Image (cartoon, rainbow, N blue to C red; front, side, top):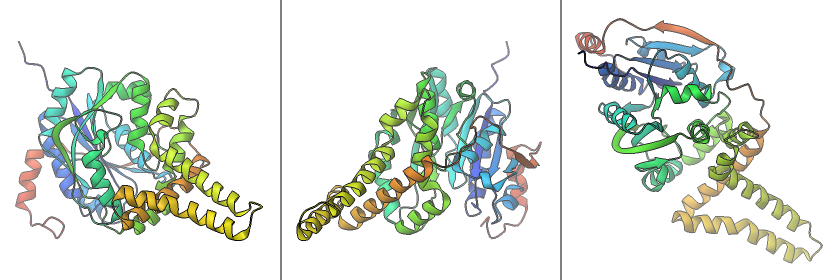
Length: 362
């Protein structure tokens, strides 16, 4: 009797200008997927920094958005899934991540033993912690239940998903979302009775963009990332996952609280009371959140940054909610830049060792 064939796995890597890390990311994906006869898809959102040129050295399929105006985090993830074919499982990896070579085996075992779990992740090692935003994020990774082993609400920083569960939904990621696509996917899966989990096993090393906290906030405003809470809320209205989004997405609650805070300050400024008392009351309202967040974050610097981030989130809640939406189930228009290769990852690694290493491979 022939032994059962291993499940087929596709790893989708979403990327935009990730030349610094894409070589390590692709090589880790190829090594991980080799035992399963699967493939690796690079879903590029319009890189201009050499990401594509590096990726062409490897036996990976490369697809790119035909219309750069459709660029978003959700579109990148959906593009990777849309370009995958005939796989039992799909792993979503970012171009600034390196996949642990043993994670797929551990994740597949868990999914086989837990048939109602749609996706599984593992430990995420944050390699860059400079700047206020990354300090807060690194602390969150250590303490938030969704980053710890057990049943979770979402698989931030990627995970291994059953293709069957995704096909029930009609699409992997909402192409309209500039962030929180993993949260939104988790909400849709859970609304249909599926679960998500993290296991006590290393999954990825994450090399985020190194920049100061306020530069990061400005980047998020310019890129549309800040509007994602409003986009998630808009997309959930009237859908079966609406209650999950309203109950679990703290960015919506925080944004609404900040909007109420703005309104309260404006009301106080126009109250028919003595000017001195009016200004003192407005100042107290202005400082109260800063003092609270400084206490909560353990210092004035991180408290001030948190307050700035909350204000950006509140603005994003409004701007994202009213942003024009495309039907998330409509397929994205893609350009295929490379169809892949018949060479195995082992053969490719041998050929890479034979050629001189360039500056990006050293």
